[in-house]
Image (cartoon, rainbow, N blue to C red):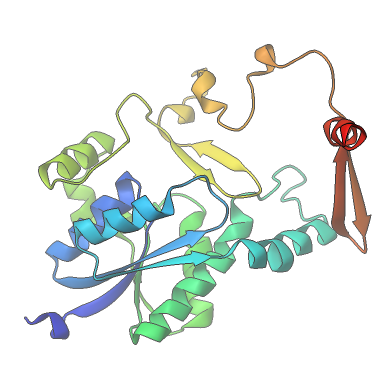
Amino acid sequence: MNDSNKKKVILAYSGGLDTSVILQWLLERNYDVIAYIADVGQDDDFEAAEAKALKIGASKVYVEDLKAELVTDYVFQMFKANAIYEGRYLQGTSIARPIISKRHIEIAQQEGTNVVAHGATGKGNDQVRFELGYYALMPDVEIIAPWKTEEFLNQFKGRTDLINYAKENGIEIAQTTKKPYSEDDNLLHISHEAGVLEDPWFRPGKDVFSKTLDPLDAPDEPTFINITFEKGVPVKVENEMIKQLKRIH
């Protein structure tokens, strides 16, 4: 089949182990893979991720800066509604999913395809968040979700199989079996899940505190933060450090 006859698929791509493996896996099934990277404020090297996707074989890479729209149209609206799921979950991860899905479908429409792919598993909430967004915006969408397909699951039983496959195919990876859990980062928060963290008896090490300190290492003195709201939207943030800098200036 000529490249021009290959079916285009827009893959939600992070540059991490799972989606890099999925990109290669889709190429082996003769898809023309276009990678889509959503910048929602995560601490990632987007230039490196783009270069990595192209090196693996993506025909094109979209790096979309969604931060401003995420804050104004999603996060602020969530704050206004005091939307806390079941009174406990602050929805730091889930609030970014609708905008990621929205841009995913827009790129598919721009590229003239109805095929999209994602790396969410078949047991979590993200598969629902992404796919309901896809169907709402493109009812005839064709979704490839490798972690929910028998073929993919038979080939990859776990993280070790992914790492070995990546090495066999010359895919550069930063992940190792020493960090057997996943992280989801955006400008609002970071979450850690899966792997060893699913064991309620497991006590994670200090490496889990990627944006904060272990409480045992934190100073004993409090830091006061003052947030000013207008019509439910935060418009100013002050704390002791900022006040001190103002006085110095």
